[in-house]
Image 1: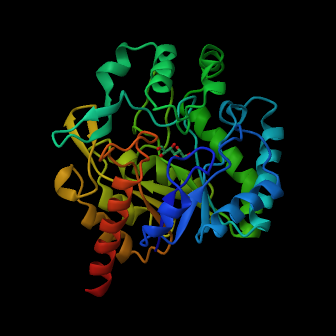
Image 2: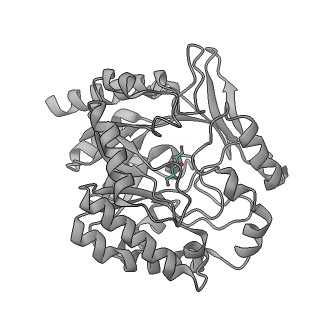
Amino acid sequence: MKMTMRYYGKDYDSVTLEQLRQIRYVEGLISTLYYKQAGELWERDEIKALKKEIEDGGLELSGIESVNIHDAIKIGTPDRDMYIENYIKTLENLGEEGINLVCYNFMPIFDWTRTDLAKPRPDGSTVLAYDQNIVEKIDPNNFAAYMDENSNGFVMPGWEPERLGKLKELFEAYKDVDADKLFNNLVYFLKAIMPTCDKYGIKMAIHPDDPAWSVFGLSRIITNKENLLKMLNAVPSVNNGVTFCMGSLGSNPDNDLVDLVHALKGRIHFAHIRNLKHTAPGKFEEACHLSADGSFDLAAVVKALYEDGFDGVIRPDHGRMLWGEKAMPGYGLYDRALGAAYICGLWEMISKN
Ligand code: DNO
Protein backbone atom coordinates (compact mmCIF):
# COMPACT_ATOMS: atom_id res chain seq x y z
CA MET A 1 0.00 0.00 0.00
CA LYS A 2 1.02 3.55 -0.49
CA MET A 3 0.31 6.10 2.27
CA THR A 4 -0.73 9.51 1.03
CA MET A 5 -2.34 12.72 2.24
CA ARG A 6 -4.88 14.92 0.53
CA TYR A 7 -3.52 18.28 -0.63
CA TYR A 8 -5.58 21.04 -2.21
CA GLY A 9 -2.72 22.95 -3.84
CA LYS A 10 -0.72 25.96 -2.65
CA ASP A 11 -3.47 28.50 -3.35
CA TYR A 12 -6.14 26.65 -1.36
CA ASP A 13 -4.57 24.61 1.43
CA SER A 14 -3.39 25.82 4.84
CA VAL A 15 -1.01 22.87 4.95
CA THR A 16 2.23 23.26 3.01
CA LEU A 17 4.27 20.81 0.99
CA GLU A 18 7.17 21.30 3.41
CA GLN A 19 4.95 20.14 6.26
CA LEU A 20 3.51 17.23 4.33
CA ARG A 21 6.93 15.98 3.32
CA GLN A 22 8.03 15.86 6.96
CA ILE A 23 5.21 13.54 7.97
CA ARG A 24 7.56 10.92 6.54
CA TYR A 25 4.93 8.15 6.59
CA VAL A 26 3.52 9.76 3.47
CA GLU A 27 4.96 8.87 0.06
CA GLY A 28 2.66 10.84 -2.18
CA LEU A 29 -0.20 13.29 -2.34
CA ILE A 30 -3.73 13.09 -3.61
CA SER A 31 -4.67 16.36 -5.17
CA THR A 32 -6.84 18.08 -7.75
CA LEU A 33 -7.15 21.20 -9.85
CA TYR A 34 -9.29 22.77 -7.19
CA TYR A 35 -10.27 25.74 -9.34
CA LYS A 36 -11.91 23.58 -12.00
CA GLN A 37 -15.69 23.44 -12.24
CA ALA A 38 -17.37 20.08 -12.78
CA GLY A 39 -17.51 19.40 -16.51
CA GLU A 40 -14.53 21.55 -17.46
CA LEU A 41 -11.69 20.06 -19.47
CA TRP A 42 -8.36 19.69 -17.67
CA GLU A 43 -5.55 20.76 -19.97
CA ARG A 44 -2.37 18.76 -20.02
CA ASP A 45 -0.28 21.80 -19.04
CA GLU A 46 -2.39 22.35 -15.96
CA ILE A 47 -1.91 18.75 -14.88
CA LYS A 48 1.81 19.04 -15.56
CA ALA A 49 1.99 22.17 -13.38
CA LEU A 50 0.27 20.41 -10.47
CA LYS A 51 2.62 17.44 -10.80
CA LYS A 52 5.63 19.73 -10.88
CA GLU A 53 4.52 21.67 -7.83
CA ILE A 54 4.26 18.44 -5.84
CA GLU A 55 7.43 16.89 -7.21
CA ASP A 56 9.38 20.09 -6.49
CA GLY A 57 8.16 19.64 -2.92
CA GLY A 58 9.78 16.20 -2.79
CA LEU A 59 6.60 14.11 -3.12
CA GLU A 60 4.65 12.49 -5.95
CA LEU A 61 1.15 13.05 -7.25
CA SER A 62 -0.37 9.65 -6.48
CA GLY A 63 -3.87 10.29 -7.76
CA ILE A 64 -6.68 12.78 -8.23
CA GLU A 65 -9.51 13.46 -5.81
CA SER A 66 -11.68 14.49 -7.52
CA VAL A 67 -12.44 14.95 -11.17
CA ASN A 68 -16.03 15.99 -10.49
CA ILE A 69 -18.93 14.88 -12.63
CA HIS A 70 -21.19 17.50 -14.21
CA ASP A 71 -24.85 17.44 -13.17
CA ALA A 72 -25.88 16.86 -16.81
CA ILE A 73 -24.24 13.41 -16.59
CA LYS A 74 -25.93 12.59 -13.28
CA ILE A 75 -29.32 13.85 -14.45
CA GLY A 76 -28.94 12.40 -17.95
CA THR A 77 -29.80 15.51 -19.97
CA PRO A 78 -29.07 15.57 -23.74
CA ASP A 79 -25.89 17.62 -23.30
CA ARG A 80 -24.33 14.90 -21.13
CA ASP A 81 -22.35 13.51 -24.08
CA MET A 82 -20.47 16.76 -24.43
CA TYR A 83 -19.48 16.65 -20.74
CA ILE A 84 -18.53 12.98 -21.05
CA GLU A 85 -16.30 13.93 -24.00
CA ASN A 86 -14.58 16.51 -21.79
CA TYR A 87 -14.18 13.90 -19.06
CA ILE A 88 -12.61 11.45 -21.52
CA LYS A 89 -10.22 14.11 -22.80
CA THR A 90 -9.31 14.95 -19.19
CA LEU A 91 -8.64 11.26 -18.52
CA GLU A 92 -6.44 11.09 -21.62
CA ASN A 93 -4.47 14.10 -20.41
CA LEU A 94 -4.10 12.54 -16.96
CA GLY A 95 -3.08 9.23 -18.55
CA GLU A 96 -0.47 10.95 -20.70
CA GLU A 97 0.96 12.47 -17.50
CA GLY A 98 1.14 9.02 -15.89
CA ILE A 99 -1.70 9.56 -13.40
CA ASN A 100 -3.59 6.33 -12.90
CA LEU A 101 -6.01 6.91 -10.02
CA VAL A 102 -9.13 9.07 -10.15
CA CYS A 103 -11.62 9.40 -7.30
CA TYR A 104 -15.08 10.81 -8.08
CA ASN A 105 -18.58 10.65 -6.68
CA PHE A 106 -22.07 10.36 -8.09
CA MET A 107 -24.02 12.15 -5.37
CA PRO A 108 -26.76 14.49 -6.60
CA ILE A 109 -26.23 18.19 -5.77
CA PHE A 110 -24.43 17.82 -2.47
CA ASP A 111 -21.21 15.97 -1.90
CA TRP A 112 -20.60 14.83 1.70
CA THR A 113 -22.96 16.42 4.23
CA ARG A 114 -22.45 17.44 7.85
CA THR A 115 -24.62 19.47 10.21
CA ASP A 116 -21.80 20.69 12.44
CA LEU A 117 -18.31 21.58 11.24
CA ALA A 118 -16.78 22.17 14.67
CA LYS A 119 -18.46 20.03 17.31
CA PRO A 120 -16.42 20.10 20.52
CA ARG A 121 -15.34 16.73 21.85
CA PRO A 122 -14.58 16.16 25.56
CA ASP A 123 -10.83 16.64 25.01
CA GLY A 124 -11.35 20.12 23.55
CA SER A 125 -10.75 19.17 19.93
CA THR A 126 -13.49 19.84 17.38
CA VAL A 127 -14.86 17.52 14.73
CA LEU A 128 -17.36 17.28 11.90
CA ALA A 129 -20.71 15.83 12.97
CA TYR A 130 -24.04 14.82 11.45
CA ASP A 131 -27.57 14.69 12.78
CA GLN A 132 -30.39 13.50 10.54
CA ASN A 133 -32.98 15.33 12.71
CA ILE A 134 -31.35 18.63 11.82
CA VAL A 135 -31.21 17.78 8.11
CA GLU A 136 -34.91 16.99 8.15
CA LYS A 137 -35.78 20.40 9.55
CA ILE A 138 -33.41 22.55 7.54
CA ASP A 139 -33.95 24.30 4.19
CA PRO A 140 -31.09 23.15 1.93
CA ASN A 141 -30.62 26.76 0.79
CA ASN A 142 -29.80 27.88 4.33
CA PHE A 143 -27.68 24.81 4.76
CA ALA A 144 -25.29 25.81 1.95
CA ALA A 145 -24.91 29.24 3.56
CA TYR A 146 -24.17 27.59 6.91
CA MET A 147 -21.40 25.48 5.35
CA ASP A 148 -19.93 28.58 3.79
CA GLU A 149 -20.00 30.62 7.02
CA ASN A 150 -18.45 27.88 9.12
CA SER A 151 -15.64 26.70 6.91
CA ASN A 152 -12.94 28.99 8.38
CA GLY A 153 -12.80 30.93 5.11
CA PHE A 154 -11.95 27.86 3.02
CA VAL A 155 -13.96 26.55 0.09
CA MET A 156 -14.97 23.06 1.17
CA PRO A 157 -14.66 20.26 -1.40
CA GLY A 158 -18.04 19.67 -2.97
CA TRP A 159 -19.47 22.90 -1.53
CA GLU A 160 -18.30 25.30 -4.20
CA PRO A 161 -20.30 28.57 -3.98
CA GLU A 162 -20.75 28.74 -7.79
CA ARG A 163 -22.84 25.56 -7.80
CA LEU A 164 -24.59 26.07 -4.52
CA GLY A 165 -25.79 29.49 -5.67
CA LYS A 166 -28.05 27.61 -8.08
CA LEU A 167 -29.65 25.24 -5.60
CA LYS A 168 -33.27 25.89 -6.57
CA GLU A 169 -32.57 25.13 -10.24
CA LEU A 170 -30.60 22.05 -9.28
CA PHE A 171 -33.38 20.63 -7.10
CA GLU A 172 -35.82 21.21 -9.96
CA ALA A 173 -33.50 19.47 -12.43
CA TYR A 174 -33.13 16.43 -10.18
CA LYS A 175 -36.81 16.07 -9.31
CA ASP A 176 -37.40 13.07 -11.63
CA VAL A 177 -34.05 11.42 -11.00
CA ASP A 178 -34.91 8.41 -8.90
CA ALA A 179 -32.38 5.80 -7.80
CA ASP A 180 -32.82 3.65 -10.95
CA LYS A 181 -32.35 6.57 -13.27
CA LEU A 182 -29.30 7.78 -11.36
CA PHE A 183 -27.82 4.28 -11.48
CA ASN A 184 -28.44 3.96 -15.23
CA ASN A 185 -26.80 7.34 -15.78
CA LEU A 186 -23.78 6.18 -13.79
CA VAL A 187 -23.50 3.02 -15.89
CA TYR A 188 -23.87 5.04 -19.12
CA PHE A 189 -21.01 7.28 -17.98
CA LEU A 190 -18.80 4.38 -16.92
CA LYS A 191 -19.32 2.47 -20.16
CA ALA A 192 -18.36 5.58 -22.12
CA ILE A 193 -15.14 6.28 -20.22
CA MET A 194 -13.95 2.71 -19.58
CA PRO A 195 -12.14 2.18 -22.92
CA THR A 196 -9.98 5.22 -22.13
CA CYS A 197 -9.37 4.01 -18.57
CA ASP A 198 -8.40 0.58 -19.89
CA LYS A 199 -6.08 2.11 -22.50
CA TYR A 200 -4.18 4.19 -19.92
CA GLY A 201 -4.62 1.88 -16.93
CA ILE A 202 -6.54 4.57 -15.03
CA LYS A 203 -8.32 3.21 -11.98
CA MET A 204 -11.64 4.95 -11.38
CA ALA A 205 -12.58 4.84 -7.70
CA ILE A 206 -16.12 5.91 -6.92
CA HIS A 207 -16.52 7.55 -3.53
CA PRO A 208 -19.46 6.25 -1.49
CA ASP A 209 -22.29 8.57 -0.57
CA ASP A 210 -21.70 10.32 2.72
CA PRO A 211 -23.72 9.74 4.80
CA ALA A 212 -24.77 6.43 3.29
CA TRP A 213 -28.43 7.27 2.83
CA SER A 214 -30.62 9.71 0.98
CA VAL A 215 -30.50 13.34 2.17
CA PHE A 216 -32.91 16.18 1.36
CA GLY A 217 -35.03 13.69 -0.60
CA LEU A 218 -32.27 13.20 -3.21
CA SER A 219 -31.47 9.67 -4.38
CA ARG A 220 -28.23 8.09 -3.31
CA ILE A 221 -27.02 4.86 -4.87
CA ILE A 222 -23.53 4.07 -3.53
CA THR A 223 -24.37 3.22 0.05
CA ASN A 224 -24.00 -0.50 0.75
CA LYS A 225 -22.64 -3.86 -0.38
CA GLU A 226 -25.57 -4.66 -2.61
CA ASN A 227 -25.48 -1.48 -4.67
CA LEU A 228 -21.67 -1.36 -4.79
CA LEU A 229 -21.57 -4.88 -6.23
CA LYS A 230 -24.37 -4.03 -8.65
CA MET A 231 -22.34 -1.10 -9.93
CA LEU A 232 -19.12 -3.14 -10.22
CA ASN A 233 -20.91 -5.98 -12.03
CA ALA A 234 -22.64 -3.63 -14.46
CA VAL A 235 -19.23 -2.53 -15.80
CA PRO A 236 -16.86 -5.40 -15.03
CA SER A 237 -13.50 -3.84 -15.97
CA VAL A 238 -11.05 -3.91 -13.06
CA ASN A 239 -10.59 -0.18 -13.64
CA ASN A 240 -14.17 0.38 -12.56
CA GLY A 241 -13.46 0.38 -8.85
CA VAL A 242 -14.19 1.87 -5.47
CA THR A 243 -12.81 4.30 -2.93
CA PHE A 244 -13.29 2.38 0.29
CA CYS A 245 -14.24 5.33 2.47
CA MET A 246 -14.89 3.68 5.79
CA GLY A 247 -16.33 6.83 7.36
CA SER A 248 -18.96 7.14 4.61
CA LEU A 249 -19.92 3.47 4.43
CA GLY A 250 -19.66 3.07 8.18
CA SER A 251 -22.02 5.99 8.81
CA ASN A 252 -24.68 3.30 8.49
CA PRO A 253 -24.02 0.79 11.30
CA ASP A 254 -25.70 -1.93 9.19
CA ASN A 255 -22.67 -1.91 6.88
CA ASP A 256 -20.12 -4.47 8.09
CA LEU A 257 -16.84 -2.85 7.06
CA VAL A 258 -14.66 -5.96 7.17
CA ASP A 259 -17.19 -7.95 5.17
CA LEU A 260 -17.34 -5.08 2.66
CA VAL A 261 -13.57 -5.04 2.18
CA HIS A 262 -13.63 -8.75 1.32
CA ALA A 263 -16.71 -8.39 -0.92
CA LEU A 264 -14.97 -5.66 -2.94
CA LYS A 265 -11.66 -7.51 -3.15
CA GLY A 266 -9.60 -6.53 -6.20
CA ARG A 267 -11.79 -3.50 -6.95
CA ILE A 268 -10.75 -1.24 -4.06
CA HIS A 269 -8.22 1.15 -5.58
CA PHE A 270 -8.17 3.79 -2.88
CA ALA A 271 -8.92 3.63 0.85
CA HIS A 272 -9.97 6.50 3.11
CA ILE A 273 -9.33 5.36 6.64
CA ARG A 274 -10.95 7.15 9.56
CA ASN A 275 -13.12 6.65 12.59
CA LEU A 276 -16.41 8.01 13.82
CA LYS A 277 -18.69 7.54 16.77
CA HIS A 278 -22.35 6.65 16.38
CA THR A 279 -24.27 8.52 19.07
CA ALA A 280 -27.91 7.75 18.09
CA PRO A 281 -29.67 6.43 14.97
CA GLY A 282 -28.82 8.81 12.10
CA LYS A 283 -26.42 10.72 14.30
CA PHE A 284 -22.65 10.54 14.50
CA GLU A 285 -19.57 12.59 15.17
CA GLU A 286 -16.10 12.05 13.77
CA ALA A 287 -13.39 10.79 16.09
CA CYS A 288 -9.67 10.28 16.40
CA HIS A 289 -8.38 7.52 14.09
CA LEU A 290 -7.64 5.33 17.14
CA SER A 291 -10.15 2.45 17.28
CA ALA A 292 -10.89 3.06 20.98
CA ASP A 293 -12.07 6.62 20.27
CA GLY A 294 -14.92 5.70 17.93
CA SER A 295 -17.21 2.93 16.72
CA PHE A 296 -14.89 1.27 14.19
CA ASP A 297 -12.18 -1.34 14.55
CA LEU A 298 -9.46 0.17 12.37
CA ALA A 299 -7.08 -2.74 12.95
CA ALA A 300 -9.68 -5.17 11.61
CA VAL A 301 -10.28 -3.08 8.48
CA VAL A 302 -6.57 -2.58 7.79
CA LYS A 303 -6.00 -6.30 8.36
CA ALA A 304 -8.79 -7.18 5.90
CA LEU A 305 -7.18 -4.94 3.26
CA TYR A 306 -3.80 -6.55 3.92
CA GLU A 307 -5.23 -10.09 3.72
CA ASP A 308 -6.82 -9.30 0.37
CA GLY A 309 -3.46 -8.19 -1.03
CA PHE A 310 -4.48 -4.52 -1.25
CA ASP A 311 -1.71 -2.63 -3.03
CA GLY A 312 -3.54 0.63 -3.74
CA VAL A 313 -3.40 4.05 -2.18
CA ILE A 314 -4.48 4.84 1.38
CA ARG A 315 -4.99 8.17 3.01
CA PRO A 316 -6.03 9.11 6.50
CA ASP A 317 -9.33 10.89 6.23
CA HIS A 318 -10.90 13.77 8.12
CA GLY A 319 -9.00 14.75 11.22
CA ARG A 320 -10.08 16.55 14.36
CA MET A 321 -9.03 20.19 14.73
CA LEU A 322 -6.27 20.21 17.35
CA TRP A 323 -3.80 22.51 19.05
CA GLY A 324 -5.43 25.72 17.85
CA GLU A 325 -4.94 24.93 14.19
CA LYS A 326 -6.94 27.01 11.68
CA ALA A 327 -7.61 24.93 8.60
CA MET A 328 -10.36 23.66 6.37
CA PRO A 329 -12.70 21.66 8.66
CA GLY A 330 -11.62 18.01 8.56
CA TYR A 331 -8.39 18.82 6.73
CA GLY A 332 -5.96 20.21 9.26
CA LEU A 333 -2.40 18.93 9.38
CA TYR A 334 -1.99 17.58 12.89
CA ASP A 335 -4.67 14.96 13.36
CA ARG A 336 -4.37 13.62 9.84
CA ALA A 337 -0.62 13.23 10.38
CA LEU A 338 -1.33 11.30 13.57
CA GLY A 339 -3.78 9.19 11.56
CA ALA A 340 -1.16 8.40 8.90
CA ALA A 341 1.30 7.30 11.58
CA TYR A 342 -1.30 5.11 13.26
CA ILE A 343 -2.38 3.40 10.02
CA CYS A 344 1.27 2.81 9.03
CA GLY A 345 1.85 1.29 12.48
CA LEU A 346 -1.08 -1.07 12.04
CA TRP A 347 0.14 -2.03 8.55
CA GLU A 348 3.69 -2.71 9.69
CA MET A 349 2.53 -4.88 12.57
CA ILE A 350 0.12 -6.85 10.38
CA SER A 351 2.65 -7.35 7.61
CA LYS A 352 5.33 -8.57 10.06
CA ASN A 353 3.01 -11.10 11.67
C1 DNO B 1 -14.86 15.00 1.83
C2 DNO B 1 -14.48 14.05 0.77
C3 DNO B 1 -15.36 14.15 -0.45
C4 DNO B 1 -14.77 13.32 -1.57
C5 DNO B 1 -15.61 13.34 -2.82
C6 DNO B 1 -15.04 12.46 -3.89
O1 DNO B 1 -14.12 15.24 2.72
O2 DNO B 1 -14.41 12.77 1.24
O3 DNO B 1 -15.48 15.48 -0.85
O4 DNO B 1 -13.52 13.82 -1.90
O5 DNO B 1 -16.90 12.90 -2.55
O6 DNO B 1 -15.49 12.89 -5.13
